[in-house]
Length: 259
View 1 (cartoon, rainbow, N blue to C red):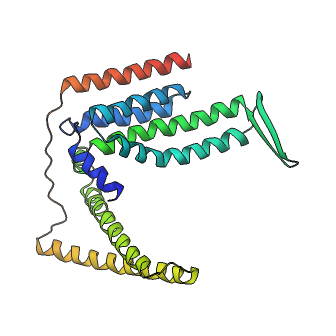
View 2: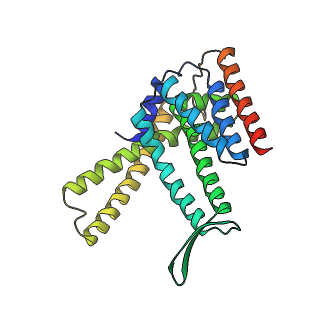
View 3: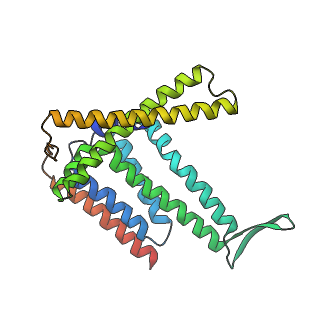
C-alpha cells in the first residue's frame, strides 16, 4: 500500500476528523508562517515537537508511520544542512580539517547557526504540513476552496488531477512489477527498453482515461461544474481558542528569543 493510501486513511479516520477544517488550517498554516518568520532554530523545533505530539497523541496517528513519513523530507534537510555547515563561510571558526591540499572542511559559528536554522525550518514546516494532510481530508480542502470563491474550473481540475494521479501511480506499479517478474530490468539495455514501454503504456492509459472521463461526463449532462457536497461541523470555540492561544504563545516565544 502506498503512502497516499495511508494519508487518505489517516485523514478520514483520525481523532480530529470532526474538528472544523478552519481550526485545523489555522493551526497548520499559522505554524508554517511562524516557522518562516522566526529568526532562530529554537522556536521551529519546539513547534515541530508540539505538533508531532498533537498528531500522535491527540489525532491518534500511528507513530511508526508518522516517523517513516517524516524521515523522507528530513533526510534531504539533513544533507542540505550538513553541506551548509561545512561549506558556508564565517568569521568565528569552531573546527577545521584539511582533507586535501585543495579541500579544507571548516565549521564556523555562523555556518552552524545557518545549517541548524535551515534544518529546523524544514522540520517545523513539514510537521505543520503533515498535520494538515493527516487530519484534513481533501474533500474538506476542496470545500474550503469553494467557500473562498476559488474559481470552479480550478477546483474541478484539482479534483480530477488528485484522483487520477493515484490511479496512474497504481497502474505504473502494476506494469513495473509485471516487467520485473519477466526480468525486464536485469540488463541496462533491457531496462531502458522496459522504461520506454512503461512510459508509453502510461501515456496511452492517460489518454484513454481522459477520453473515457469526457464521455462519462457528457452522459451525465455535465454543464461545466461538478456538484460538490460541502458538509462540516460548526466551529467549536473551545478548540479555536486553544489553537489561537497556542499560536500567540509561539509568537511570544519568537519575540522573546529575538529580543
